[in-house]
Structure formats: structure tokens, C-alpha cells
Image 1: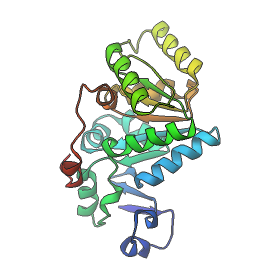
Image 2: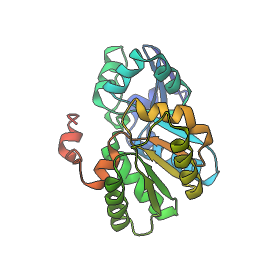
Image 3: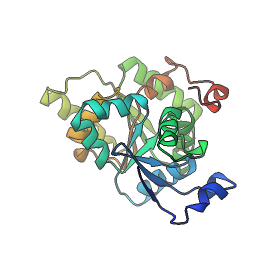
Image 4: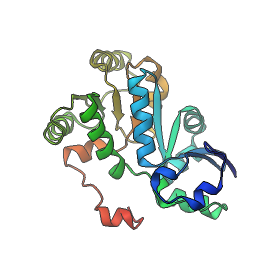
Length: 237
């Protein structure tokens, strides 16, 4: 298992006294690059991409997506090329530990914990958000709920029920996203469909940050419940 630290002093891991002391680490688990970062580090990376008008794609490795990378070669290749593949789940942390490296729990970054911090940051700094995925009524409910919770947030969206094989439908979706020019594009079409769409069309999208979010839009809409914090904190999400 290959380990690369952004901070070469490996002892910082065992001596860290706060989340801010933890280095970002690339861990290669069975050949899969997993970017172990804390939530504040993730928010900082998103902020940097937005203010410098650069591009950042964020995927997430949980047990399901890790299995997808074992089944589909294109999925594996795609995750090897995106800038961040965060550790989304205790299962991945346990697998890394089984291979010989025990990492602090702060490296497990679930969307339940991450998205409120991202949305709060976007609301505070005037970064716009675009939602792609789910049904149109879920998009409408999600945008309405987010606007109520984050009054200064500019949020829009498009449903995910279009054919990836229909060039006209895909062009229409791309045009709507690019017209909105979002700082953060959250794609919640489930994997591997969302990864496939970004793999095909990501380089044509006018967005600073692309986040592959699974069922997160349904959570915003109130259709799917967030995991209770106490369960998540126990590593049972």
C-alpha cells in the first residue's frame, strides 16, 4: 500500500491534537488512490477552486463505489484522474487499517457531515450551486429548502431523467448548466451513472467544482433522511 503525505513529517498523524493538524494524505488501496482529507480541508479546497476560477472534481470512495471500481475499468480510470477521491465511509478506513495504516476518524468525510459545511461556506462567500439529478419535483423541493436554510445562496438545478444516449437532451442540460455558471455543481444521479456522465461531459461544463453526490439531492429535498449525527459519529452510517 503506497502512502503519500502532503506534509512529509509522518509523525504529525500520531501527534495531531486537532483536525487542523492533520495532513492530507493520498493512500493507494489495492491500486485505488484515496484522498484522505478532513472536512475543513475539503472546504478550503473548494474555496480555492472558486476564487481562483480553476477546476476541481471530487469523487468519493465508499464500499459501493470501491466495488464499482473493481468491476468497471472505466470507473477505476476515471477515479484515478479526478483531483480528489475522498474517503466516504468507515468501511474504507477499516480497509486501510487492515492493510497496515490506522488513520484518525476525522478522515472519514461523509456527505451528511460535509454538505452543511460546504453550503454554509457558499452562502457566506456568495458561491452559487447547481443541482443535477433526481426528479424535477425533488429538484424544486431541494432548491426551495436550501434557499430557506441559506438565504443568500444562489441555487438552481435540472432533473436527472434524461438519456445519456440522446445528444440533444445532453446538449440542453450542458447549455443550462453553463448558462448558470455555477461555482459548485452537485451531480446526484447515483453511481456509476453520475461518474459516466461527468467522464463524458465534464470538460464541457462551466463550473469550478464538480461534486459527485449520489442521493444528496433527495436529502436536500427531504425525501431521504440524513443519518442521525450520533449514528454517524459512531461510524455506523
